[in-house]
Length: 94
Image 1 (cartoon, rainbow, N blue to C red):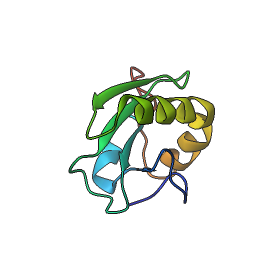
Image 2: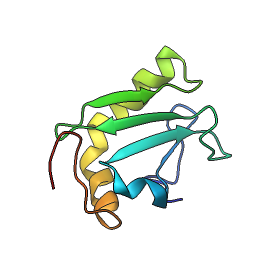
Image 3: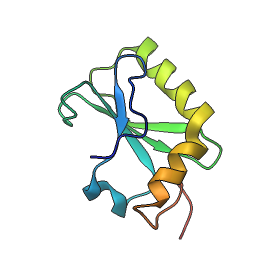
Image 4: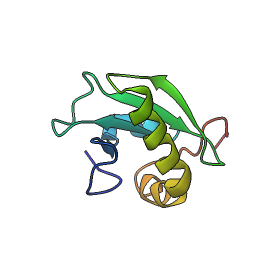
């Protein structure tokens, strides 16, 4: 499972799985186990805004921190995503 960054944001890793690359860019937010149980799923728009598809066990504060972090780093995340997937941002056809 590729991690977007080697460190945690608000106590969670941001990652995707190889099964995910058939969708638009998104990030799962999970603890050190990197399991989808209790994890959040955020799809990413071309301006860095996110849509929470699955909240998981994240608190409002944790979710806000992660969304802000993605907003500030989504282009770096997209560079990594593009190495594995032909799909772009949420709402874009590719």
